[in-house]
Image (cartoon, rainbow, N blue to C red; front, side, top):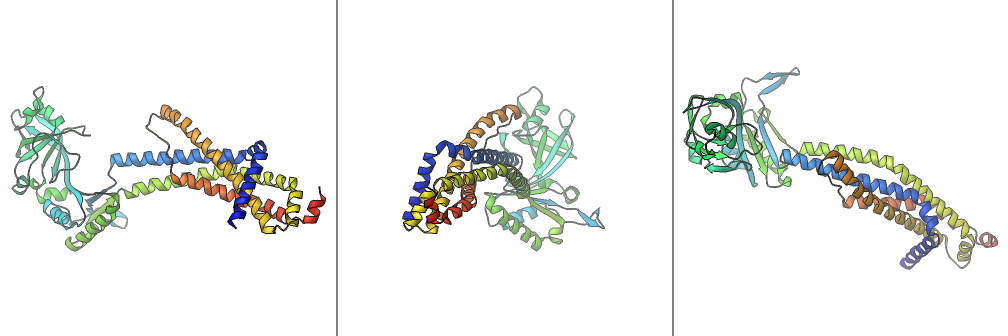
Length: 408
């Protein structure tokens, strides 16, 4: 059986060599269709990769956000609850200690407000952030030191400020001279113990121990808790653990909280690009269909030209399935040959398009070549070979040997 298969493919390659230019012209539709398909799939994969990179830059895909939900729906009307749960630092620590998988955790209370410089009585607008420990990964101390667990436990009036606020406090003096200065916030005199890197901050920011805020303050504007897994695969397990802990320890269970991840955004992006692939694939598929008709044309001509050869082979004992397999293997070989030519042309087209796209759109965009694209091309080649080669192969197999030889 294997010997017959190898012989059939060898014969197919020989026939392609004999009619090379005729074969190439006949499969031009496949070449163009596959080239367009490769270029489109590679560009779409690149677009999806670029979109995911942008999502990853703006928000962590490993992050689980836990936000209080102080509202309820009554007859489709959003109404403030009289009583609801929220995280304070103590309950946050209990939740964090219940996690069995490694994760980076943080809690943050945020409010824009006004502060007063104690020495000059100058008022400044800034963002006040109540935080706990450990500090978030993107928070880096450039001068002084961060506050400690003792500062949180003893509710010490200390603060970290970002570089922008430090410059506002000291003017033309060195940035470090802001250390030790005191600012007044809500009748609390806070001493600057450290200066943080600005990062993406566009305004002045002051970070204070979240334990300084009263329960009523936290309830009025509940803090946001975040749990960041070490990898994306651990996100779902950690989310389940968080929800189970809240069910067991919070009086109103999950109704008072919204637990969400960025998986939904990634999933929406993936669905959008999948739809784009299907639509563009269907459009380009018309060219591939035309190419398949070209393959059928080549094989029908081949059957006509080799009628005597088929008759002789059948007279010498070749069975219908041998003739059938010979022409099917030739069809698969021709379509594979056309698909490979189209694959090479498609890769060349993407190399031409990418610099043009970069110049016009001014984005760091690259085409993405995945195994999925190459597998799809090979599957298309096999399908075209089988579907459009079946009729010519059956026609050749049904030839009567005596009638076929008489046509000489």
